[in-house]
Image (cartoon, rainbow, N blue to C red; front, side, top):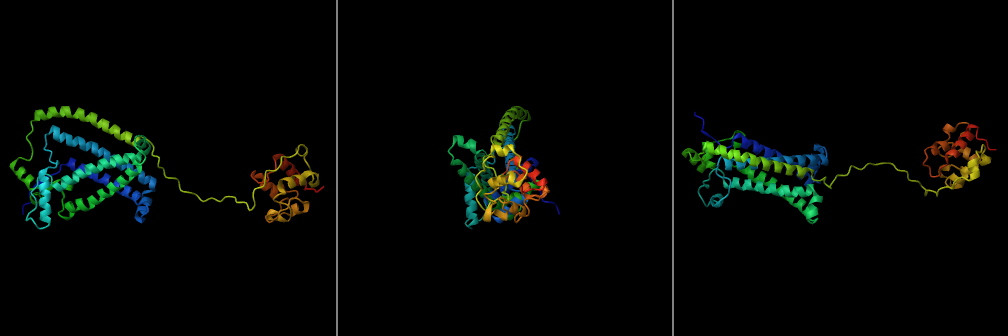
Amino acid sequence: MAKPRRYLRFPAAYRVEHWWLAASFTTLAVTGLVQKYAGAGIATAVVGLLGGVETVRVIHRVAAVALMLEVVYHLGAVAYRLFVRHARPAMLPGLDDVRAALQAFRHNLGLAKRRPQQGRYTFEEKFEYWSVVWGTLVMAVTGFMMWNPIAATRVLPGQVVPAAKAAHGGEALLAVLAILVWHMYHVVLRQLNRSMFDGHLTEDEMVEEHPLELADLKAGLATRPVDPARQKRRARVFFPVYGVIAAALLFGIYRFVTFEHTAIDTLPPSERVVVFAPLTPTPFPTALPTRAQSAASPTTWAGGIDDWLSETCGMCHGGDSAIAGLDLTAYAAALEGGASGPAIVPGDPENSLLLIRQAAGNHPGQLTGEQLEAIRAWIEAGAPER
């Protein structure tokens, strides 16, 4: 059995563009919608899978740059086909597309017996193509406002940023639904179209979808005759001009990306820390030691140690209401210690809690360095009372 005749519909360059667009669009859709609907469970799961919202934003912006690069290439490819090769502008809509749309509408309602006869591109394909053009323009403008809000609000009122956010998210949702409903129906459900995989359609598929183009192909009218010499002259004009335009567009993309650091940053996750919460108000700062106290280094409790401790520590550790049961205003009570253990261990300053707590330097009733050295020497001497 002979294989059905096949017709080339999309060369490799067309198919590369299609999948480039499909990859960048899908990445933008996934990383954008999980931010728009951040409270949804599946959005939280996707964000976690991708490494957090900051990573999602980076991926989203990389995909946006990839889409903008595709636009630059596509403009050059279309201009080359129209100017250098003198191809027909088959993607431009016209009255024939309006008639075809009405015929398809009547056919779907059972009011017409046959589908409309269409050429290289159907009205459905033209509608989708120009929807992509319009959507890309909207997403680029609103994306710039969100990416560079400070620059945008220098020339426009501040309301444009939340308005851009709403338009950006709404257009994204519309685009995703258009792909899932419109595009998938026409190229997968109604009739599986493999031309974006292998580039070809069978003759039966051409009769079904593009009968007018098939007739032109068989009549040798599908392409315009080209004079190689004229085409070469047009190419010599096209490439320098497009090179300048492409360089300007690429510089615009670079400025788009690096214009400013967005004002919207995600705060780092909060940490739970234990803080000191005293049971009683922090006492007023103690008075500085008197000149006599600073000059002398007492060696006994009664010789001056008791005065230091009473003045500095007595407010919290004195009398019946002493904190933690530690009373430092009386010799016997100081040696006895409190709930945490002995504050003064005669002969052993390293295990005396008084020196241990004071050594940190941030105690509410803080002794001076000279006082601590004198108390350390007093404890090493056995902490004599008199």
